[in-house]
Image (cartoon, rainbow, N blue to C red):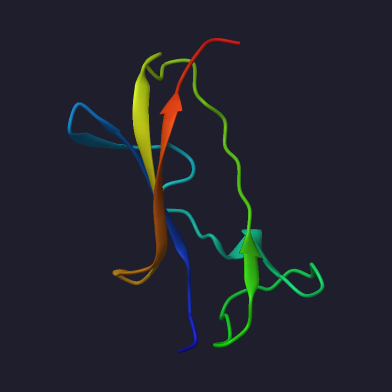
Length: 94
């Protein structure tokens, strides 16, 4: 099935509360998608049965608490997760 639009849904699970990462959660993921076979940008919509690579990064703001947490990252097409994962992370000072 074609994916018309991809939206980032990125939040930290901190003490059971989902806290969105400012500047990335709710933003379009489409500018960060490339075709896996040639590395060329692949703006949305994304065709079915084609392999894509998604990369993104964002700053950790100074007001974020310095704590261990779990980061949940999902790419949504409307209200449906196309892909999601969780990773443990620790926010520290540089």
